[in-house]
Length: 416
Ligand SMILES: Cc1ncc(COP(=O)(O)O)c(C=O)c1O
Image (tube, rainbow, N blue to C red):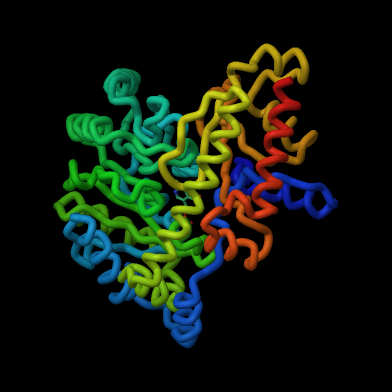
């Protein structure tokens, strides 16, 4: 199994930049913003905490995370919370605890499929509806499940990503409802990856979690890597259901956690506990980053749309998923591009633009879809990123304007 595609494109772009090329880093989904002072203060204050601590996480963090969900109308006891070194290992533990094959949205985040395969199981990709990413299309879900059962597959879980990476879209409530009803009918555990929940651009938009609809069978995973840009701190939390099934899953996840990571980093947990109390200073910081993500992701989507690509307007996070299918014959005739991988290679080699092909997200190799991550456009230094975060007009900052101009140039040359 190769190294995660997102990390690989990041390395390739770094090498191009080091060789002096002007690059457009649109491959790696890192939040790309500085850490809030209150969190670095807490981290250093707790640096002396060197004990392992409990497997599920320190009580302060579990209480704070329970409060975070309870404020979102999901009543949560601290005993339902498991903290881990990022949501990625928590997802792995959840998939392992449930066992069996797993329904994944097609397309979906690279690591779900890889993790399912590492567990010796098989992903069952079910296409999503364009514009409603992250949720298997309920119209097709039953047929896929029936077929999987007919051929003897033991499907026990389904992942939903709300809002979604790679498409940047948030599925409509009725689609989530219907997918949850089917999960109940087929007795599937739902794993709701809500790591981008606090980055839905329209903060007034109603958010529906699968845990609102099917609370007895939904595990939620989330973390601070995106909303507070703490990816490198490695901290995430999972919420298991308040049900007999939830108790069983919790025990299994804790066994797995105890054998793999023992406990998350203690100082980081204390900083995260503060973050999950959602003080005003961090709420404001997240609101600023949400505004910046929205402005830049929508602008980049606008550039792809203007160039003739099919692209859904992003609803949250910092991604978009344009489809260059309208240029299929042109791209093949002029550039010998036949697959998404050909297209992303051309973009990297000829233009130093790092993006990922849809095939990295479970889409067909012939699709000319690209996952474009916009958050590394905010700047290369903390000063630039801070300026982007504080700016009322980030698109007018010279380094962001230059990147968007370059994107236009590349798209024009590519499609001319
Ligand atoms: C959909 C999705 N889930 C989970 C993660 C992993 O986050 P963490 O840093 O909490 O492991 C990412 C990060 O790229 C993501 O895009």
